[in-house]
Every structure is written in C-alpha cells, then in structure tokens.
Length: 186
Image (cartoon, rainbow, N blue to C red; front, side, top):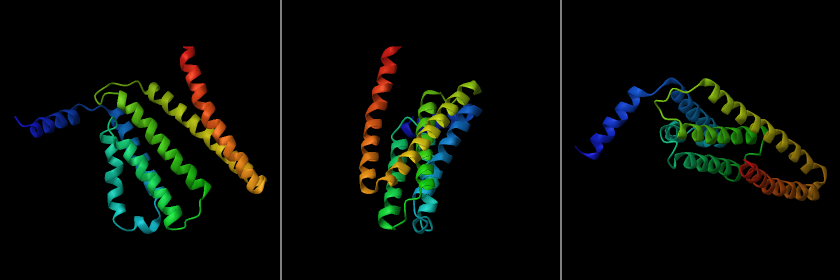
C-alpha cells in the first residue's frame, strides 16, 4: 500500500472519530486566523486574489496545529500589517492594532491547546472554559497596558516616545523573568 493511500485512510479515520470540542477549537483557530488576516491586509489587496486565498491560509493551522502552519499564518498576518502601513499608507488605528494582536494571540493559544488535545478526545468543557478565560484575561491586561503606554507616549512629545519604548523594553524583560521564576517555584 502506498504512503498516499495510508495517509488518506488515516485522514478518513480521523474525520470519522473527531469529537465536538476539538472540532470547535479547530473552528476557533480558523476563525481567529481569518479575522487576523482580514484585519491586517488593506482592502485594496483583499479585493483581489487574497480574498480567496485567506480562508485556505487560515485553515492550515486548524488542520495542522503541531506543524509550522501557526507560525506561517502569524508571519503572513504581520506581513499584511506591514504592507498596509508601509505600502498603502494606512494610518495605524489603535482598535485595528489591538484586534490584530488579539486575533494572533487567540490563534496562538488555541493552537497550543489543540496541539495537546487529541482530535478524538472527550474533553471537559470546564478545561476549555478555563483556558479561554485565561486567554481573555491576558488579552484584556495587554490591551489596557497597551492603551496606557500609547497615552503616555503622547504626553512628552518625542521624549515621551523614548520613555514608552524603554518601559516596553523593561516589560519585555520582566515578564519572561517572572514566568521563569514562577516555573522554578513549583
């Protein structure tokens, strides 16, 4: 039996055995990836071929969350953001920036959860609810801190921007240090 036939048989068996909660989580991965792509790219690009390609690209991490696809979708989304800002001179809107960041984070955290949950597992909904509540808490905290830092940047003109950049650097160093300390404390 060829390798292709074995893969087709394994895919057919996986489709018949998948349970509802892992399927819903994969749908969440697809929707968050698609939302990130649609929010990041400029409308001029979306009118063309990308509107047809975006759902296919968003489907890749839902099908293969353990593979390279979540990273590819994140890079394509960030590339779309950079293209919109630099190539199409779209102004940076705070709501769009926060929405793209939230979609990227939600996609990332759902891929992490689905990567460890087998497709045919019977999962307690409380586990998923706790996971999603934690993700929402992280998103809200990040958004509040981000808005505060943006407001601080406007206070001091160019000097205020330097202060916010340094504050962001301090946060970027302290968060991994705190997480490392929490892991060692166990």
